Amino acid sequence: MFQSRRFDPVFQRSALSRTNLRGSRSLARAFALGASLLALAACGPNAEAPEGETAEIEETGPVEVLVTAAFTAVEGGGGPVGFLPDPNAPSLGFVLSAPGAGGIDIFDLDGLLKTRHAGERLTGLAVAPAFELRGEALPLIFGSVSDANAVRGYAVVRDGAQVLDLPLGAIEPVDGVAGLCLMREGVGFVELVILGTGAHAEIWRVRDAGSDQLSVERVRDFPLPAPARQCATLDGDIYTASPVGGIARLSGDGTILAEDPFRAANLTLGDFNGTQRVLATSGSGETVESFDAETLVRGASLDIVDGLSTPGIQTPAALAVTDADFGYTAYANGLMVVFDEGAGRLKVVSRDALIRAVVAQD
Image (cartoon, rainbow, N blue to C red; front, side):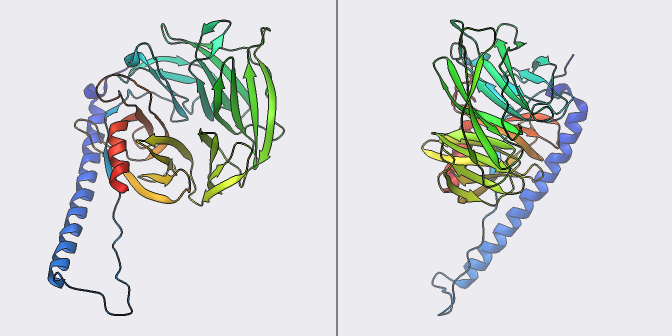
């Protein structure tokens, strides 16, 4: 029913156009670099800036990262993305997507759509891959439904990639629901960061208390520097993305630790061999922006370019990165999945390639 990327002639034509565009940009950068080298040689080895003046250092361009693969194109547009690793069989892990048309899509690592679970449009995803439900390990997915100011829960049966609606107690934040992310997962419970429609967030705990529904309780709440629509967490800190207020790093109790004015529509976090980075997109640009996870000082832009047989990413939108083992040679150390708004499909970058890119900018 769904065609593989390599047999999609329409996609190949768009890929060719994209390749030509990338090639033109690469040639332009090459000519610029050559001109700079000639100018440097003309100055001689001992050339210095005049006394009292500061020599200007030319700003380098984006760091190029090769795309690894593209997933099957499906209708519905892009939305939040996430991962459901399988610790017992890494190559059988899943990639999750909440398309703009509603519901949840589950893909395998070959990029094929396994399941489309119909439902409401989700503006945020949080995955608890090791939740113990009634004594059984059953992965759970939580999604924010901003249209209904509600949070929905789903259970995943790995065999057959089945998605089941989960009986969940009513999560009713005082400021509504705009988005969510996973705060932490413990034995028998999950804590979620719920973003309000205004500059406000709450932490809610979900647990299995043996009743007909999973019980829920509000743990705490705190103000945000600006209304946020996406969030992620790392080492107990909360990172929020606001299309009007930028990126913010907050402690678990809501204390503001760092901010940057970049108007992010999407963000994710990762540890790249000891270097922790925030990766964010505006939803309309051509690159993924990087920031130091502690200070939010801006790093290099990442330009995801053509791989061996896959066109690069034209307009990166929703994205997520994981260090979980997803098997195969390319994904044993994790991966990043990005929705390419321009191509209308998910694309994948090996985490090994990301690590090399992050190291290159340090």
